Image 1 (cartoon, rainbow, N blue to C red):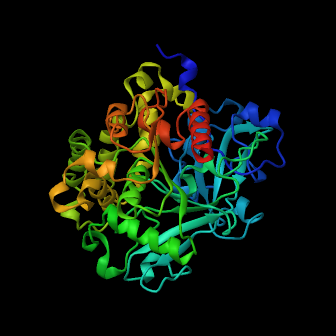
Image 2: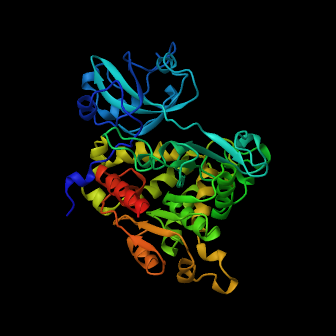
Length: 469
């Protein structure tokens, strides 16, 4: 039986720490960061307009008596900051008066600390080093306009490190963002150890349909919403390859991906067999299994049959549908043991219902419906056997056997849609494959940095060894 310590979630790593002691950070349970620290007057949200009542979820007046739940609920979209559990990434905007006094640039990533001291809330604001840029392949433009201004598919990307270093490509996963894509591999944690990918030129790309690269929600009017094309892994990989070429990258030292990012890694090794020397496939597979495909049909059905979806022609966000999607999806992302050990409590939630409402209904449920469906159909059609000889299509052992890159497979022991058994079968057919299983009760999300600190450390160690081999 897994111990309760197996439930303890790891906060995402960000950049090097300043202005906060290790003791204070440990006491608050937050990651080190390259920060500006703001003590905002209590309450930090704007006072209500005349005649306006506070939301029912507003915290009581005394900060010392506020629970994590109440502190979190204060930060609703109405007050310009998303609702997030402690230590998780959130996006804070310069329009927030307390932030604007210290930062006048575009939106940036922050880490919300829900502790209160001396009647004041504390924010730990982490400004990520990477600037989001856009790329279009038709003109090999590394500084393209954002997707809403382009009729061709546009890739959102960030780079870290120096271009003359060996290159590593990382792509986001389903509902992943550039801000949170495997950052613990390339941004220092502040523990005195350099990040695993220090000394590499890291390129992080957003998945088509993922709301940062071209997606139904950000496409020009002619391609908006239901008019957006059904993009594939091949579309992503060919665009990423063109981006690398424009950046002067002739070979990848590694392609690293979690979940749908891992499937992209497999597709890169298949479509461009000589381009990536290594691929790291975390909680993923070379072909979406029938079981995995069927699981995705559940949240899809909940969304497309919702009363506000209107056959895809909704004029206001299909919130009932996206929240239903998220509820159906939520259980599959974790494991039976995660629920048995009440791991939502390690995230600061007093009940499972509260966890589902905050993390799934209000966060995943805030996504655009067509963006979710665009990513989902890409996932369902994932299959590297489509790129071989006609007579070999559908033959997974042959497709795996043709891969030239060295391959590290890291499934999570309790993943319910990319189970380790699938990876065990795949590694049999790889010429140069290695299998390392993440022993975690955090299910699928253990592979993406949302599990325990031990999960993340295991992943970092295996990637480090793999790159050095």
